[in-house]
Length: 219
Ligand code: E4P
Image (cartoon, rainbow, N blue to C red):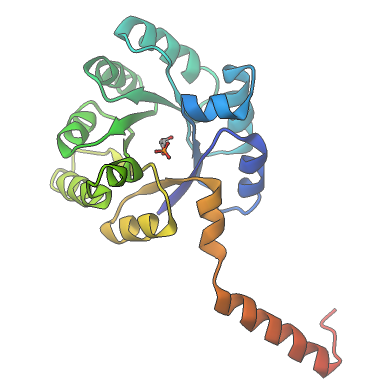
């Protein structure tokens, strides 16, 4: 399973890229606003220079003509830009055009299997079903992941990867991994939670203490 980080904070991205475990980045207009960066285009360029994998940059417009112009501008920033498009009729029309040109796309704000089928037919590189936001309204977000993975598996011609979005905790990712989801985009705080286990902490403390008793040094 590939790990993307869901943030527009350059320092967080650098820190996670240093682990060697980061496969890509997703941003959205809310995350860009939170970053406080004054130039979206410069921000995306900076992120693309840090991470080799796909970096999702979302269009701001909602009509076909303007989205198309924005998408072409975003795609020119770097080869690893994945243009993020809303799951609307116009968004999918742009998706199809970009896919035909070999430009990576991430179709966002997916909340149903029917929408995911449309995105795959439009040639999306990634489909982003929002697990946490479905859970928030008492719908089973992970069930949607299972359904989309199952549907895509029936059709080898569908090359769209399932990118689990709106992740709130490690369990969302673990369960989605069991279902065979290709990618999870995870907030930095949740990635850090992956490392934690009290038995790791207590076990390591005991080993450090016992090693001191040997009086030896490896170096
Ligand atoms: C996906 O690409 C979105 O940026 C993100 O996962 C949305 O998550 P949220 O529901 O926590 O805002």
